[in-house]
Amino acid sequence: MFLTRGTRQRARFAAWRRTRPFWAGALLVLAGAEIAAVPLAPVSVLVGLGLGGVAALGIGAALVAAGLFLWFLPHTRHYVGMHAVILSVLSFAVTNLGGFLAGMLLGIAGSAMGFAWSPGLPSAQASEQPEPEPPEQPVQEPPRLPDPGAAARPPHKTLAVALPFVLLAATAAPAPGPRPPAPAASSVSVPRTPPTVTTTRFTPDGFTLARVAEVPTADGPRRAMVLSMRAASLRDYRLRTRDGGGAELALDADELRLGGQVTLYLTRLTGCVQGILCLTFTPDRLPVPPVAPPFVFMTDVTAEQALVASGTIGADGLALRPGGSPAPPPAPPPP
Image (tube, rainbow, N blue to C red; front, side, top):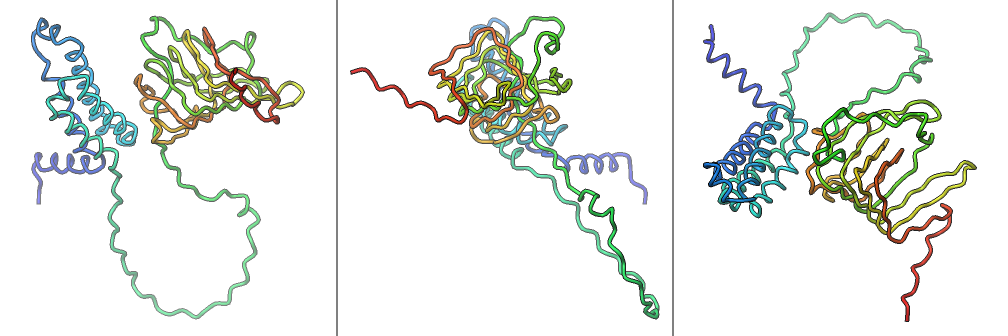
């Protein structure tokens, strides 16, 4: 029986649709189109609407892009779904009530469906029963000796594609021009073992974008995540490192403020985005897409910090002490 061309196309589309959160993406596209369509009017009317009209166009375009990401990059569903629901709720305050509630509700529903979607398992095929074979005379086999190479073979591991998250990098309308190279080995050298940094809250200022570069070390170049941003603040900052003699040193600050186009070189970053979704990023596992909006922050952050470049540095409660000694108690208030 021959299938018509239209039937084959419908079957191909149905197979493609089942491998991704199609209806979640469709709801996000509809939500973005509804939010963006309300302020679409002559330029004079759009200018009269002010910031709300411009914000509606931006959020609508972002929700449409989120729906396309769910269609064509379904593995990014957790990252995209989390930020899409934030944009949907934010549209109620900064636009025309989230497209008169319709766009906001569609965006929330599509974000939740996309975040909760999981790829279906292939249906188990019926096992074929082999034809019975005639009974054979049992043969005495010699005992098998252990394979000496079996212990050296690594066990089979199933690699899971980790969700990208977001995060951290260069921002807010940088000046056009070629991307700055990594620090030259003649000017800056990174220690063999990067210092460990912890902070209870990491808040970048402005849009962020992540990339990968090589930094020089005493053992040769090493890959690192390059996170650039306009400014950043780190609450309860703790840095642990070792000096040339091997003694551990600790640098503590109640709050560390970095400004003037901050660039962080990290070999590992672990934290909870918005305090909800805990992820780990490395140079081989960057966020997808490697861009974060201005309102994204991370809590309970632990990072291997290879290098920091900043125009200005401010700190509250800065203290340098041996790593093994406890932090000094706070000074009593004056009488």
